[in-house]
Image (cartoon, rainbow, N blue to C red; front, side, top):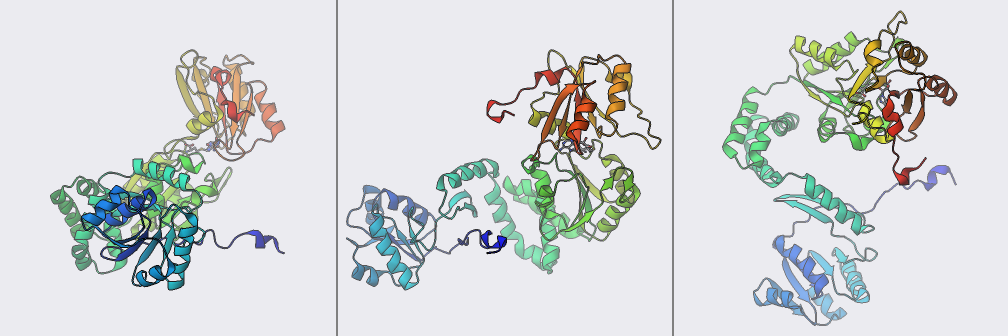
Length: 473
Ligand code: SAH
């Protein structure tokens, strides 16, 4: 057997779809607690419920009495099911007896009618996902019936995150589809108009139910929409994909072309829209794959061609990321741009290594410096400021010049036993934390073979390092 044979080709055989159920006959077998929950959902979606059960709890009984559901049969028996089932769009086997549910499921399946045996995926041919509802918008979460508690937990999380007005927004967009299609018949153009709409203030107006304001904004897009692209300068954080901001993810999902650095962990690129074009513009120390001017020109070129360009950067684009230079060149070229902040390496590494960056007792300030030496090899740093003891100094790109930086600090007054640490691959799998002093750190780093990316943290805060008990090292 080849190694690949153990890799499943199909992650799950449960394919999500939305079934039109309004006005359709749905057979609900069962008249108790299990059935009432499913019945409520079905009624909410306008199904015509037909119930088979020998006993109905009061809530279900009430549906029958008020005409919301029909009571079409008592005890389950095959002949009766065979008579009733044809023509039903779905069947729910929702009695509290698993064996009975399985008989129902087998019969429905034989007739080619999708059937869900509640809490029993094995004989089911469909399952009912957990739902988050916002008007006509439905987010459903399914775990192939395998982890319903996880599905419910995810539902809570999405519930908290999904804006209240999402349903109204969807209704608004649906109502304006004909207008937009008439003006821009090409699918691609329409898609862009709607994406611009969602990115702009019109979406908030629609969510808040202010249709007039939403219309004004949509109209301005319809009038002014041309084929000029724009550039999104986005910070992707220090590596853990869960540290991406919602905005970063949003732009990653909408970009046509992505310009990325070598600092960017592959796992983050994996979150970019699949059909976006990926262009590597990373710079290696000493060997510039693409000089900055060329990167700038590349961004401008793609934007002028009408593309939405994502300039994706590790950490925060404005912290040692040359983001400032990039937007200057965009401004000069008259290209629209937006900047999205990211969690910078100092914040990410500090948090994941348990080292606070400031501390009431010992660090009233925090200084970010670059350890990147000039072309002539000189490390030109604000030594006097850096040697102030009431602060934390964070050195980015500080590994190759580590010895010189630590010597410089001592020469300017820091004691040799002053605490210092290195966080390598912070927030990423395989993160390493080395703890020492300004004297011992270069040696520790060398012995451990520390490689980029790594961050140096100098200051008393290193002694306040706290590691959560279960994380131990
Ligand atoms: N704009 C980035 C920094 C770019 S400079 C930011 O805001 O984080 C590149 C330097 O950042 C690296 O040499 C290293 O010192 C630091 N760095 C970036 N990601 C890191 C990580 N995951 N772990 C440790 N250091 C990191």
